Length: 296
Ligand SMILES: Cc1cc2nc3c(=O)[nH]c(=O)nc-3n(C[C@H](O)[C@H](O)[C@H](O)COP(=O)(O)OP(=O)(O)OC[C@H]3O[C@@H](n4cnc5c(N)ncnc54)[C@H](O)[C@@H]3O)c2cc1C
Image 1 (tube, rainbow, N blue to C red):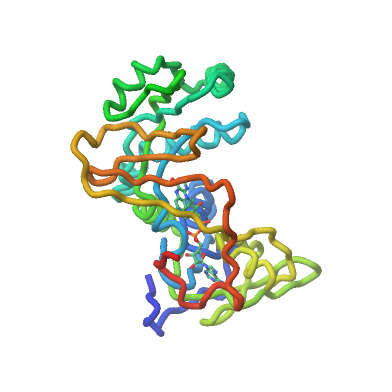
Image 2: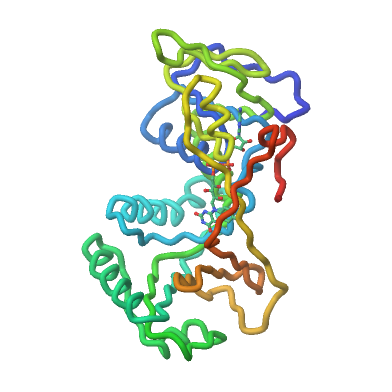
């Protein structure tokens, strides 16, 4: 792989598909295309893999959504994470420690009961628990205002950077080329279709370009006169020192009434919130060029 300082990197003159962005999404697209037998796959990353949002994701993997197709997709992810380390030799930090979802009022309880019915209909294990059963799984929790909970034993958590590296490694094992330190600066357009990608290191002809630029997706789309409705938002989370009683097998926990989540992290917690009034991040001159492995 090339690095930011490596000037000797040679771009291939053409590829069937150029994937722009080496975060978990770009690496996953490369992994899956190579698994489908595509050989001519190139990933271009402006800095280094995982340095966008991926490196600081909390890494909770929950499968249940309101849509059956998204739930099935997440179920597939869990199956993949279970075998990716064996397949690639790269650790992913995946552990199926289960996921606990709390209900602190009757409306929420009715919702999780409905969700359990849909979960079962698409083959996802989900058990309804009483407050005392939930406390057995999460002994330090005050359950005095809990009316019920649900437990999904196949949910879990992963290390997002490691997962991304494992997907990249799997893609490379099947012939993908991953080039770091290569920023895409424009597109060649022929008959309304992308026919090539321009970069700081030269141009690559391609049949398909895939925009996997995360919070940069709008900027990247603009280079091809495509409006991508992506707005970066600020998100906060905290990580505690080790806490007695927090064990590695503690399930992840979501409290949709208080809009927060927890997961075990090195004997303590990573805890984040789903903000009620989320704050957009709109730097006046766009995302700074050196924004990489950085937090706000
Ligand atoms: C605090 C926090 C906690 C989170 N927790 C979770 C969680 O628990 N579970 C979960 O599922 N998700 C979580 N997420 C969300 C998750 O991090 C993101 O959805 C995911 O990492 C996005 O990956 P990505 O590949 O789309 O973007 P990124 O990882 O940002 O990758 C985009 C890449 O594109 C590159 N790029 C940009 N422009 C160009 C260009 N012109 N040329 C070449 N390369 C370019 C960038 O350098 C970057 O590496 C969390 C996010 C945050 C911020």
